[in-house]
Amino acid sequence: MTKLIVNNIDSTIKTDFLDIVSANYDNQWLDKFGIIKSNRPTVDTATIPSGTNGISVGSITVSAGNTVTVNGEWRII
Image 1 (cartoon, rainbow, N blue to C red):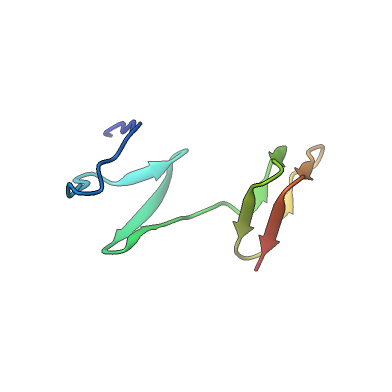
Image 2 (tube, one colour):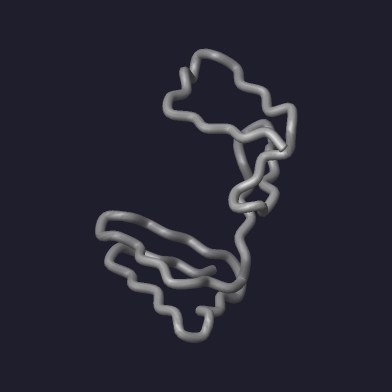
């Protein structure tokens, strides 16, 4: 598996990913407009900071004994 760490991207240069792109071992899908994000339906402890917008799609379950603190915005659609 290729590990990709990006600090800066020059948008004038084309970037091609030759291997599967993943986040925390969940595959992500690429099309010509960007990345389609995949997320798991179970959430552990998390905080959405003030000034941050978060979005989840589908049913979401907070794992037993965990909490989600929303100081910004979190939309579940």
